[in-house]
Length: 64
Image (cartoon, rainbow, N blue to C red):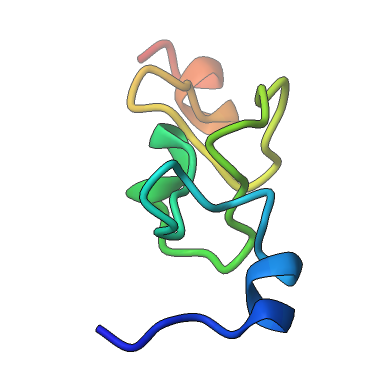
């Protein structure tokens, strides 16, 4: 794997782990959207993430 330049390493420093690899949050790792967050960030709310336990409005209205 090619080495990162100093400029790129500074740009991605919030996402780099101890092995200088870009690492995302566990919640974001499986997400298909491009709004990935760092493994260092604590995710309070992600507007694009829907848990499998999340209930749709129409499901609640229909009694499911």
